[in-house]
Length: 616
Ligand SMILES: [Zn+2]
Image 1: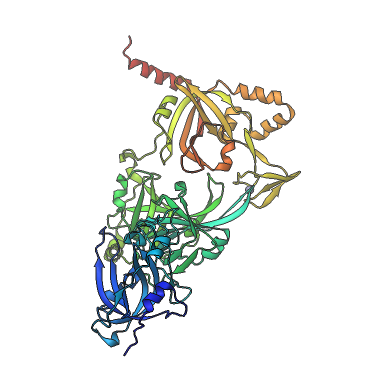
Image 2: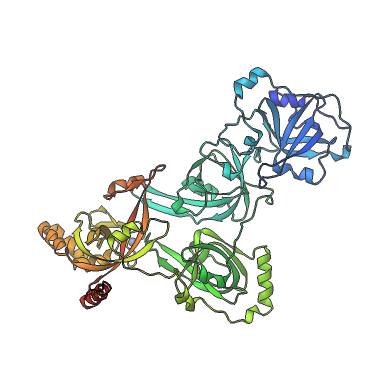
């Protein structure tokens, strides 16, 4: 006969020294808790008795399988292996994370005459005056600070995961939490160098039933955790871990918060990988891409028809080199599409042609009709274990293979609203239509005259290496250092970065111009102008004022920029500070190209315009 550990439950709540750590108790009641939200996880309330006392327990979802399998029965004996004791609303509640059913003893009648475990009134008012609902313990109300009294775990490393919060429940006010989440995406390690030092980081996207969140590890945490995370695997992540307002410009995850790993953050791979959802796809068929507007994010699945070679390009925005690779996908709709992958996904791509590949988070562009680009926050799964993949395989091997595929190259002209046009706007229209103020860039052309060119910082010293336009710093006389190339140059090449105020009959606008446009507007290279600046400041002012009052057609891109605190002092423009972060946002109008006016063409346009007024 099993020995039931009489008095053990009381000892747990009193944390009596020398108590039985893994007591044997009897199950006297099992009740399913009606979930308030149908989407919520299945929960059970179970009453355990040690023959002297009985106590209500909440079963962690990880232990639900004991009920599903029928092993945990009313009347049965079991051993508590992992649990945590809590006082909730004047009740003692045990959260049970792990137990072992002792089915060999069968179902017994209720043993002894157990009494409920009473909460000592003093103890209750002292330490737990709050009204924590039972739901709060499961994370729905995470603002309550929970004070566990005593806990026991099977092994120190896989210690209690009783306080499993849904990702949705995390906030900067959450203390002591654990999430159980699937890593749906892991970034490459990124490094940075600036005048404050250098560092590295990586981030992961985490998913559970309630939602998604992004987590980032810097420096030491990058070293410690990068190899631990694998895309597709499930992890327990336990605080301390910083929860802060999300920087949404770096992520397309729909969560107001994001996590930053700290030194003490615990990350463990879960033994049970099953009860956390897989990546969810909402596929768009390849033929349907023609009706998707550019810059939308979609999911796509197809047979990998062709894998291109990797090539390296220099990012125009960050001036950093990265790898790209072009893939061709086909599906049952008889269409093919090109999809570009970047960075490590490109360089270490090893999925053989004719495999099924599913992509989550690809951006639609109208380049070459319709093409796709995997976002850094997106993910790729080869041969996913989903029905769609089997359908595609079946189709492909039963004739799909030998079909001829249409591309989207010939549909450009039929797509409405999807092609890039750079409509002519007046300055007031640019402002009234709030171009560039949404997430995506806007493109426009404007005919305007230069009023003023800012003399301060009209150029910057750049690296001499071909293709590298990065700013260099003079570390010693005649030693100009490029961090990216890891190289010193005897002199820099100056490149324009002009701020130009332009106007038309409706208003004024500040435009930024890079080197090519700068040369056009000034009529000489930045190197030449810099030399003049150093020898004859008066002449510099004359040259800049000569460039004034000239009219150009500017092709522009309007986009929201986000500046961190440290960069704020360099801003000279009116900027709006967002209410909850130390970032400021403003729209930058970047000139892509400037062309001199063709007076004949301009006159014809004007004549056509005047005719519309029906003036004889
Ligand atoms: Zn360089």
